[in-house]
Length: 162
Image (tube, rainbow, N blue to C red; front, side, top):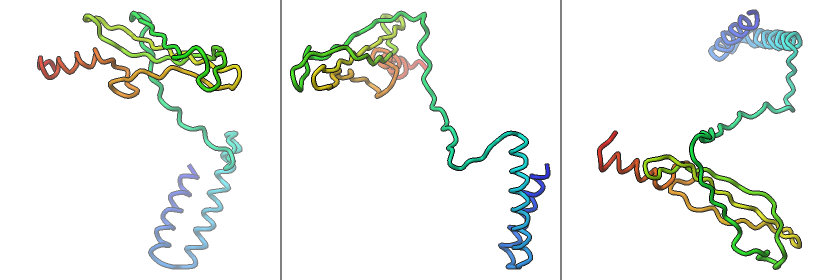
């Protein structure tokens, strides 16, 4: 409450300072800023907050897309590297992991989730990572498949369904 009152007074004095160039107003502004800083430090110690300019605030979390419901049927497509050996040195490959991407598709008036799994393999000799290229999509990073997009566009523009 007192902090808000001091903040309002400080704003008023700043407005006065920009209007007239009085030394008294400047001194009073400096005194009010000192009081405000002191009260903020006291309130921080009472609440347990510590202000450290070196510590960055946590960044705002990015929004993640919700997964498709488990009740939808799923088809899985596995994409393996083109060659069973390293393209750089010809060495053997060992399994490293996989990247998955899901896409919603409309097949015969039923929704299906197409899960594309791209396996990653690492060369045992030169540490190169080999992975199949991602398939192209109608909308980059989109979740709608080509069949679903075709159905939506046909319904909207050819059949005039809203």
